[in-house]
Image (cartoon, rainbow, N blue to C red; front, side, top):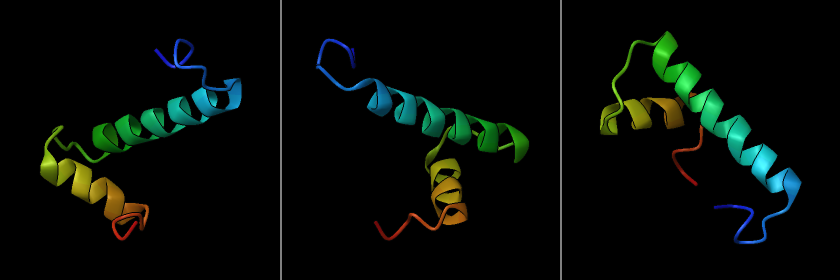
Length: 50
C-alpha cells in the first residue's frame, strides 16, 4: 500500500520500525490490542501529547 502511494523507502522503513516496536511492547507487557494497550504504549514513549 505504501509503495502504491509513492512513499519513500525510508518512510516505509520508519513505519515498519514503529509498528514492530509497538507490537514488541504489547507482547512484553502482556497487553491486549485495545485502547488501554495503545494508551500504555503512547505513555511509555511520551507521545500521548502529540
